[in-house]
Structure formats: structure tokens, C-alpha cells
Length: 273
Ligand code: KIV
Image 1 (cartoon, rainbow, N blue to C red):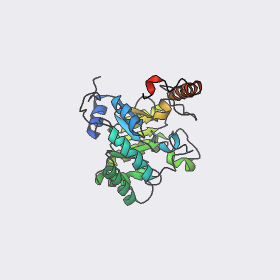
Image 2 (cartoon, rainbow, N blue to C red; image 1 turned 90 degrees about the vertical axis):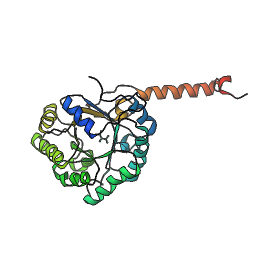
Image 3 (cartoon, rainbow, N blue to C red; image 1 turned 45 degrees about the vertical axis):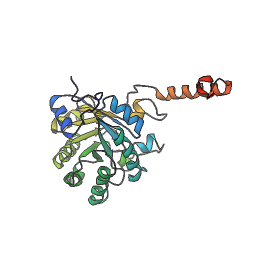
Image 4 (cartoon, rainbow, N blue to C red; image 1 turned 180 degrees about the vertical axis):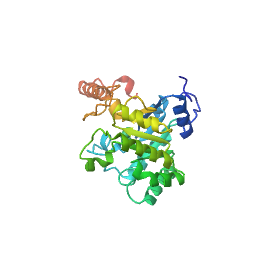
């Protein structure tokens, strides 16, 4: 299928909420990955990824924390500013970190507005469905597009007692429909059986983006560090490693160290006369 816009052209047309809605309606699958820094965002954007997510997963894959909970709003803004500047075509979405999407709604509006004012990103993502409907509606009314995140909610890890596949189809469909009605432009679905992913997608008319939600959704997202093999830790079953960057970096570091030890680096080409 022909892409809606080309990431290779000098002035690529920006992916917007309307582009994504059209892609769902025309059956074009949406690609989304996380990004936390300028060069990675630039490469992913050039590769034609439709949405870049400045995810609160930065806490785990960049900061080396055990959960997503410790990352702060100021840190999210710091990363979002770099990613927003690097992305020329992709839409850039920024996670509201814990507890910015759980405290008073006015606070969520304030921090969502910070994302648009202090970075060149385009939307926020927050965890929750039916219970977040009023919050989503208020943020959207204030002018900030919201991506809703239903199913497994990593910010709820201590309430749930771990990360589990979410199977309550009725509740999950209710969450997605409430988020759509409140104005969410995409519903992200994490870690549900494939038939639940399909039921949610059939129940709403906005695009659905799955992570561990099977193939019957409008698009897919993965954490980039998992997808490129940059992580040393546990990988969920839904991850596919498309590369082994950790080994590539390690081999380069070993070769560099060996070249220093042997005296082969720097050579005449790397030395000023
Ligand atoms: O923060 C994150 O990386 C996420 C994933 C679901 C993609 O929210």
C-alpha cells in the first residue's frame, strides 16, 4: 500500500490526528516506536515510523529503574524537547508520567499544555479508560490531543501486583469506548489476548495501536530498546528483536579497546601533522 507521506522527501507532510484516522479508514497499518533522544528520533523518523512516543518507559530502558514510576515531568519534557526537534514527519506523543495523570484534572491540563508550549511535540498519552474520561475530555477541550492507554497499565503495577495479560473483554471495550467518546484520537491497547484486541478495534472508530494485543488492530508499537536488542533485561513475549545492537556496540567497544592497547589507534589517518 502507498504511504500517505514520504519520510524521504525534503519537506515531508506531518502525520496528524487526521492522517491516522484516514489510515484506519483505508486499512493502512500504523507504525509507532518509542524515542527518547535526538539521533534515535531522527533515524526512526527517516525510517518512516508514523508515531514516536516519548514513553515513560525511559525510566526503565534509559534510567535503569525497575518500573516506569520514578520518571518526572521535567525529565519527560527534557526528552520530549529533543525528540520533537528531530522528528520532521512523525507525530510525537509524550507520556504523562505518574502521577500527573492521576492527580487533579487541572494539573493534568497544566502539564499537557507544558508539552505543547515547551516542546514541539503534538499530543500526550495517559493511562486509563472509563475512569479517565472526564480528564481526557478536559485536556482535549484545552487543545491537547490525547492518546488513551488501556489494558495493562504499567503505572498501576503495584495495585495489580505485577504485569499481567488483561482478559476482561467487557471492561476493556467499555474503557476504549469511553476514551473515544471523551475525545481520544487513538486507543493504545497493551497486553490483551488477540480476540480482545479485535473486539476493542471493532467497538471503536478511532485507530487502535497494540503492544501485545495481536494483529487485529490498526497499528503496532514496541519499546525501541527492546526491538533493537539494546536491553539486557527481561523481554516480554510480545517483543520481537529486529536487531542486536547490544552485541554491535560491545564488539565496537572491544575493537576500540584492543586498538588502543596494541597501539594501532590512533593511526596516521587520525593524527594531525
Ligand atoms: O512508555 C512506553 O514505552 C509505553 C509503551 C506501551 C509503548 O507506554
